[in-house]
Image (cartoon, rainbow, N blue to C red; front, side, top):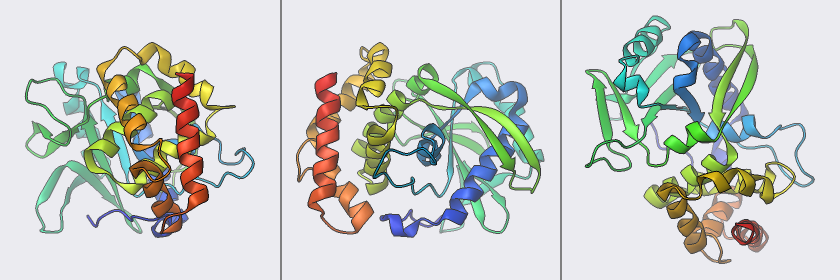
Length: 279
């Protein structure tokens, strides 16, 4: 799979709609497994924040190139992953391949007008687990270890998707998505792991646009504060996002404008400062 775009200009609305349609299609196949999964990643902001009711001056979220799905550990412990993979195979999903043509067991795809992929993630549970490592589940099915993922099951929101699936079917389904507080934690941890412009942008977008103010996210984060993943994420925000020329503000500016931008950088640092002060 090609590298993700490093700027907003590389994201196209048509592809975002394909990812949303894929999410709806997957939701129609989950049924009794719906409580075992949560949507995380780049699709969340547009589902968490009504794109037709944005604050003054806010732009619609640029979207995403793929669908990220977090799995509970219970899926492994109770063997329900077999039901999940069986349904996905029957629905037309198969493992993707990388640029060298080798299977990527943690990423599955379905072919339509364009390729849409699903990445599976799971929280650490073994002593040698670390972020980015693969957990083999079946011969052709794996999940990426994602520190902090368990918080997405503690702070999550159920949303209703309506429209056409990637197969052209008209459908309406409810699905769990990562809540705003857990999303900030996961994106901070992801930024620390890989330093991507898009992670910094996604984090800032939710912090700036969710609810009436950042205090709405603060309230949802308070019950998670004692968790080590939340503590680490707060430290990352303080280190990388509070200076005008810090990594976070600079990379949000690079993503949105393709270059340093004083106004964007000030906006990012200012919102993160307010968020941390309210904590």
